[in-house]
Length: 415
Image (cartoon, rainbow, N blue to C red):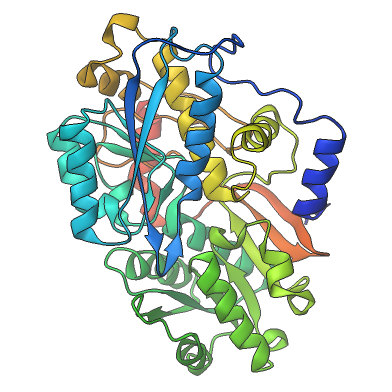
């Protein structure tokens, strides 16, 4: 098992700033001159209300766009990024999309992160012939739609990946998944974990919380009643931390193996959960750990330091940065006369194939398809010494769910 000891996130950031790692950002054309032309309108939608805040994806996308606008824009034109909050409300999600697509006439949607937005608006995006380059997808419709593609993996992939690690490395025999009872979220992702366990001759179960009034103590008792040896937390970070604290109060930390999908890969988590979880909580990271030092990982931190210093440093922030970067790279290749043409921008996005980044374990692509999930390999970390320790580098996930995605990659020459 390969292990890499990481600095705590706070120590890492302080170290990088002291060494001058944030001295320069690289954004778009990187001319060093502010864009002054007519703005190109781009939309974004996030969810920020109970049970969680997914705004770090749009915050990071906005930071990258600000950096691009300070460095020549798109052929001299700035990006005007218009962001809406759906507040986890389907009606507000539909209103947000209508405002952006019809009132503002945006050419693309970038950086989206929500439990409800994609489920509501996927048909609208197809009807309006607009691509959503999302960053914090959490529902099945986000990955099973023709006009949505995300740099993040979503809870299904991350949960399966976490379960796979626990089975292969820690000999888990029975895993219970703690999720949210949101249509096409909890049952979809925890259900895929159960199917993975069954495919291995093992046992899986699910406990789904009411998102309107989640009761972590009751869900903990249900998890214990399942008889599982491993508890897999598949919740937004704040709610996951509350669940972990309840487990600690009940003296259960050492009684089970513990794992989580990607939301707990957040720089604030190790200090929030405390030393009781040191070496105990294994977390699947949908993008590569932020301390690896590659060009995009370093630039992501530099862009946030320059344009959003108080923003979270988490997986969804990495994903928002990456979606914005891939979008800008695509626009810079287009005919400048077509930048206000939604159909032309959609065609350019769908033509993306083979983009790479040190933040992803594989190539990013779009193509014409009814499913889009370019990111389906990840990394495992464990809470350790006030930070995170990498325990498995990039590995492909094992699930029947990915079969049609792999076939699409073969057709595109990527597999």
